[in-house]
Length: 228
Image (tube, rainbow, N blue to C red):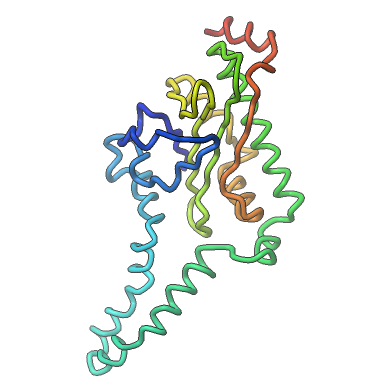
């Protein structure tokens, strides 16, 4: 599930204030979701990222057992070590890939690096077109791709474009630029799911694609003017 983050589309624009680039925005949680997204598929997927709610779900069998076996309610309720073990197993063995051997079983490192290279190449294409369209000639642009570290559930990907000129900030992308990201970054060959497996296999969940805007070719700038 891809979410392109811009200051004008998030519910709390103040979270867009950054002091450095690249800056991860995933930790801001619900505040970077679009206005009016409550109850949407994106909102429901974000709920899964809340660790406290995951812990409650992992522990939900215990009250069920208490209701089914009231004569053992005291023993069940006084088993904190078992409850801790259940939460640990769910978090570390089911919802994460926590060691290099398990990562290698997901995808060979060489293939994972190829996936990261594809993301970088497509990211640079996106940034080149944005820089050319805006006529940017100084500083760097960063396409920051952040993915959820949770395994075995649908991927969640946040993408933002950040710049260090005149000071660190998140670019306010227009509809065309957001559409460019949505149609270029992933496709039928390189899917969001494949990118997620790449992130899990590498243990790398923030990918920073950097472009020096002064290096954008004259051809790209002319092409941007022609299609404007």
